[in-house]
Amino acid sequence: TSYEKDDGTILKGMDIFKPKEQGGMGCNFFKKEWNYCIKCFCCNSLIPPLTTYAISNMLFPSMSRLAVNEDKTEFKTVVIKAVRAVIVIVVPVMVLFLVLRTELIRFVFERGEFGAESTLLTAQALLFYSFGMVGFGVQEIINKAFYSTQDGKTPMWIAMGGISLNIVLCFVMVKVFG
Image 1 (spheres, rainbow, N blue to C red):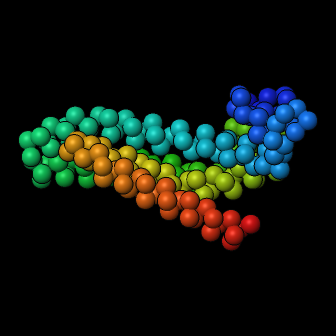
Image 2: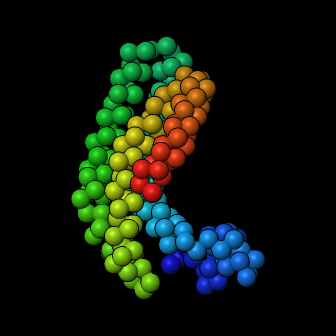
Image 3: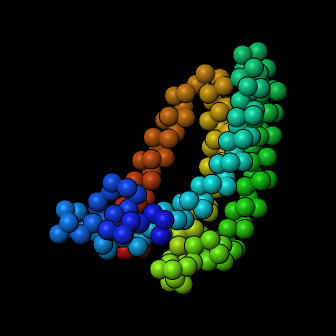
């Protein structure tokens, strides 16, 4: 795979998967699972951000201008239209990823050592990643709306809450799913 070097290290400089005899940590149990997650993340983290960043960066100056002029009605209208645009663009991509996830992973990655079993495991991970696409897109628009009103603390607190919830859910899900 493109992320794994011949000596067992992954992502240049990470020796977590390198055998203990070679000075690494010897975590071979997670080696394949880590690669599945990386590949799934690469598929999922390219399409939504391209559209979402384009929309949010295009509208950020307008939102800032409306916030400075204290035109709350028009500001709200612009934010709502941006959120709707993101949803209209990202939901079909999400549905496509949910319905065709196995075929997409097979087309993009299945060759060489990445066989049918790897495809199924990566497709399963992509299933769960796909549900976050809409949330990511809406979050980016809402963050830009807060930034345009010169409020950077609210997105920070929301992000900290999300990270905390993610940590808690990781521990819960490990116990539930093993």
